Image 1 (cartoon, rainbow, N blue to C red):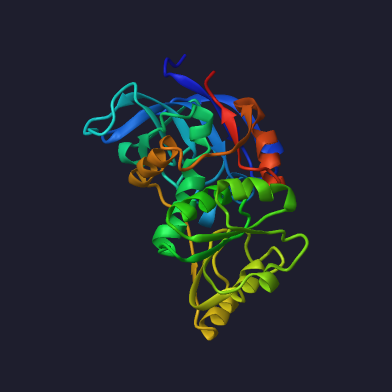
Image 2 (cartoon, helix red, strand yellow):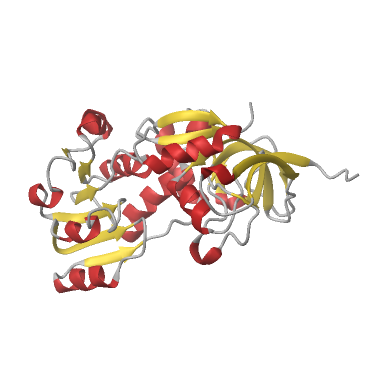
Length: 323
């Protein structure tokens, strides 16, 4: 019998619906030089999780099943590899390691390069911290790196009440922008509390008929949802930028943007420990808060993904991994 250490993880043996996810024992990873071993206390659940559960990821990046999904983690450093100088055993950390390569975060342990983690925000618990990395980095990088948002810009954020959206609203406000968000009416008061200057009920009006002269659109919905990306071009002023987060920008959208003197860019988030440290500081200072819709045990990963796939949660759903 093998004496190799094991751990609990959510494994899927085939592509498909939530029912393919199962709790099982598997080998515990070991850190190599420059990596840390993190005991996971909580793992965030994101739309990319269920999408890649069905498809295997961009270009089959997850490889053939079986594999373990998940990227968002918050936990404690249990072991450090040779060459690690930024973290030590016992540090509470959070991160989005390896993306878009597999990180296998729906598990009791993960390993990854130390600089893909940051010290977790001191003022929140592990479930709240685990809700931040992928959504927070998506929001931060799309605003700062892709759109170069600065003070005074008018920014339209679609799906403003979602996991990425509610953080994007707060980051954009922190950067000094005038923030406009789309969301159902029940979430308007909450979004105003987060800093939104205007909120549009997309279920009642066509947003392009009531929003104009926008500098930046952060499209968290995508073209497939009632042509949201194309319609968003009508809200931009000349020289404005649309960042399409859910999928690549279709050629016809690029052509339409160029014809109007606009910029359109696709987006994919990257691991960034430095940005996570800055986000943690904003959380600890009370500038940004994270919304956790619910915390479910690791064994209920399938239910968690079902809820995320419905797309109606306010904020993030998180898995509790270590009690």
